[in-house]
Image (cartoon, rainbow, N blue to C red; front, side, top):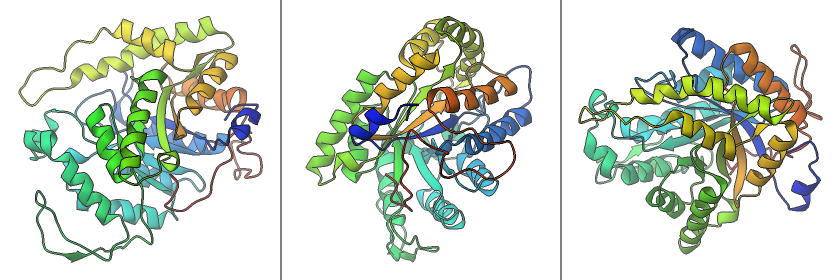
Length: 372
């Protein structure tokens, strides 16, 4: 996963590197521009040799203006040919798990197995009121929703509901040819344990450092083993802020200047009880993110990503590259990380990806549905 992949190969690693896109809105641009830019970044990822792109989902805030990650994924799948496209994550508390399952199977079949489904519980936000699912669905409904989604994507020909989602047995149409994996966004031990009981891989977020992620993964391994799952084969995904410059100081200065404006959008969250989500110290949070993520020279970024790739069970690194703002700067970041940090062969702006050289640092498995 770096310009020198020898260490990863000796350790038996098989780590893919993807982009993680927010479609974040900044004051000097429109929502439409943010979405168009994110789509362009996704296409640039394919040209630069990344393994894939994962799209975030948010409602009613400017931190990310994509309200349907699965819809965005469909659009990007239709305009690419090689990369996988995932959701990080569809908010399961806001929708019916069968509806989401049907869409996931449809996209996976139409794309030839290039779709990846990530889901999350979300928060106690006003979304629950708008979509009519309510606070109880957030507090207690996630396990039942995840269980039903898992059965719908299992390849079973017929599925019936459960206690929270009661319905008679119905045919699964379209029926997946084999079990479609689901990644679970997890920030707390209960969610980690829930995913582990199902043998579902984790989506680990930007806020946690490597030690915190290692603790969650250790908990996952214990619970997964107790339920008969092999944690080493889970294929977790770990998200990281990424920005590269010639030297560490220049990279840090750029992120300090650009990232607070994006993070300010998180202050738009409104809780179901009408209170705001709180006023995080953005400057302090930016400093934390700079410290724990690959922000700096190519050498520092390589070192940090090597450490992230060593997390047990992690097979996918998701790089958030929109931190400094601006379309051209972000496109430059995408290509420079690919060339100077990951050792990928940057493709010409036109033409097909060079499959022989596109990824020299992270040998990627070509598996359908079972890419854990």
